[in-house]
Image 1 (cartoon, rainbow, N blue to C red):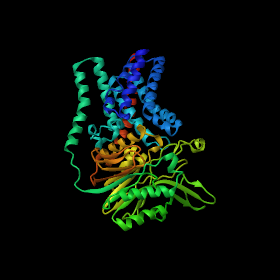
Image 2: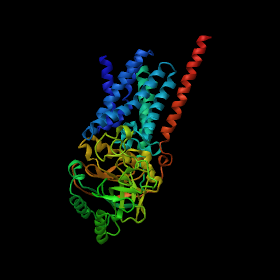
Image 3: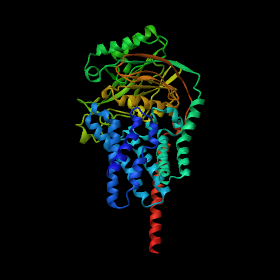
Image 4: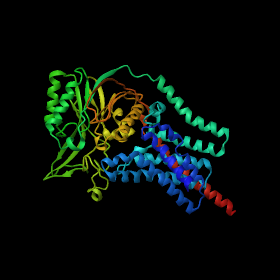
Length: 516
């Protein structure tokens, strides 16, 4: 019992390191202790139940250690995220445990990798419940130099690598054969060597544009949504005055503008007019991209979206939006595509509408189309906060023509925890996947610049107010990941089905052999 508890605790610790500021390379051996626990049990129902308990404990500890920061905004969020994330992890591992006792080793090992990644894919792309924070490939967000091949596979390729290495190390530890040890070393080292070759030889595009990001450092709970709109606007204007006059793009954070704008006429808002007046007189070649809340009205008889709310004789949608001020095209609003569950999108609204997880309450509107803003021939994709967690959604901006990326965020809800730091680091993986430079503006920590190979060139951390300016790369190249999205996850779904068919065929054949 004590040995199993130590194994479970060690697996949970090794799984958590990449989300707590440590090296994600611990993921390459994180499952090995848990695999030894699995190997110690037989195929009986009682052993299956015991293994389920140990696996569940491992994944619960992993979730608590890495997403406990959600408690700062909403305690119920920790329980909900742990339940749903833990479900997919537990389902994949127990499927492996069951098959490993009844089928050849290659089938069980392939099923483990395929089922785990298939679960990540389904959880990532689910419309009702999705919080893929613990996708294994995200654990390498602090070491993008080791996963430059994400431009081909995305983060799910990192999940495959981690799982395959764990199985190779586990097999080598069990057999104690030199051949198996060499195989495990090759599985761990080759992807890193390939990544380093790409990293060293990577050549950014020659074209660049000067971008400034501002960090207002406004308290989410005391000032942002209850403070003076005039003071917040003045704070933004003062920061804008600190940016270089020749900056082509100035980025302000999510919901930076303190007033609610008309979705069909955002330029008519008082705060937008104040920003435009300032740049018209001093910097006519500058485009400001700022986060805002926009509202769309529907007439009583007008077709409306499923997320529309009822007013007095009318319906309306509220969007978490990005607004371009002084852009060169008619496209001046982007609606956030991936909404935060429980805060901006309430699953099972009729049953759970009373639940408040902090932040912007109520069901927000959304769309599935990425907008691109343009200034001086440069096209910028305006991703909003949570969209930086979803590689395929982030790539939508590049598919729409974005040559550089902007990320606007408001991370202050969770305090000075690992939450906002990892959300910034995840953008480093998005940069590698799409080979786009990123300028990130947060309300408070972390704002900064990320190159197209995932390097951080400048940053403003927690509880800092200020401005950063940098020349960022402009690129039109397209990666395999941009073209094909989460193809690794789709392939995993197919392999899972094939492995289950192989398992069934093997069991039927063996049963018939025994009967004969």
